[in-house]
Amino acid sequence: MIKIEAIFRPERLNTVKDALSDAGIVGLTVTQVSGRGAQGGVEVTAARGLGTYHIDMLPKVKLEVVVNDDDTDKAVDVIRTNAITGNPGDGKIFVYAVSDAIRIRTGEHGADAV
Image (cartoon, rainbow, N blue to C red; front, side, top):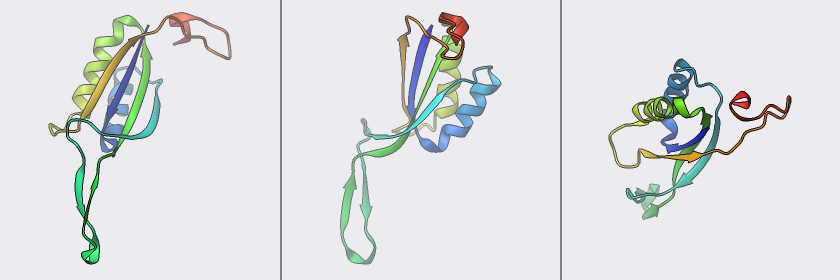
């Protein structure tokens, strides 16, 4: 089993979620996060002449999904192709090995729990 963690722009969430569902990957967790990467932050000019300030933590979403090994490439491709805008700050995808998963309700382990 593989855990895929993707951090990307919040406005791309529904597109990514719908594409994953269309690909048969429906179980996921989403968290609202903030962060920064190579793109840095943004300069904001305040209203009424209050000056400018720098925001270096930008809003993102973190999507987590656990898939069977055979579905890893498909899930990563679906996330990437649907999260991309082509601009700096599109995000990152991380892939981790999962040693076990347990369904709380039934006690099933491994792929049966996913």
